[in-house]
Image (cartoon, rainbow, N blue to C red):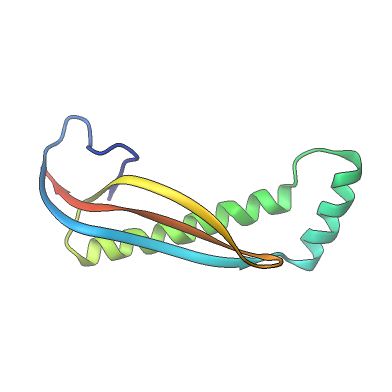
Length: 104
């Protein structure tokens, strides 16, 4: 499956549009990660636990979008975008969406 944040896939022709596809996941902070992040706020630096959490969330949401596109018969998703939102205190949604297409 080819994913592109452009409206096209360079060098390829879109021969069919299948429609909007999406994937999401809602993740909560882990207490251990939260404690470590609090300590890191004192000394500064990257919050590695949160970086890993977001990386896992992006991968899971993208996999769900790709599965939906595959089920529609697409071989690419164009105009891919990511979005995040707070669901409750300590939990956030990562949402990815795009247009499923068939390219030649």
